[in-house]
Length: 123
Image (cartoon, rainbow, N blue to C red; front, side, top):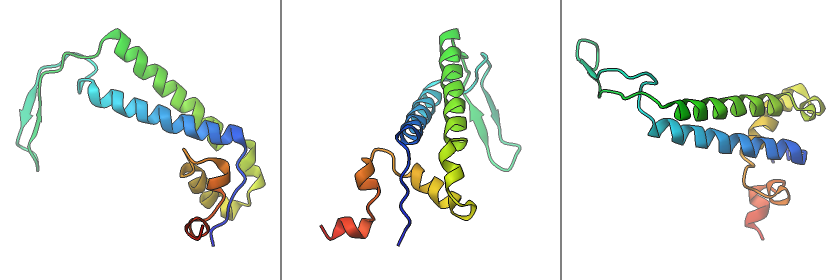
């Protein structure tokens, strides 16, 4: 049976916001042109696979600022989550399991996250 952890609410909130910021950043980067600076397109078939890119108009100053803001917030949250005082309470051999458990509890209320899947299935 998997160990359950009583994560502090601020740690849960930080992890949830980290998930949200990473999803927002990923979606933004997928929408933006492939190059930050305006560049001509290219095609290269001399390597082991063909690589092609269309011309890139580059990113606007607002787009660059938005990416920078999200990356900065992502960094702040990652530091907050990984350096949280809670991890000192978890024994060293159990920290990886606890960290993985926290990563997968997003969107789940604390009382449901603490129950095992087998316990939920028998209800």
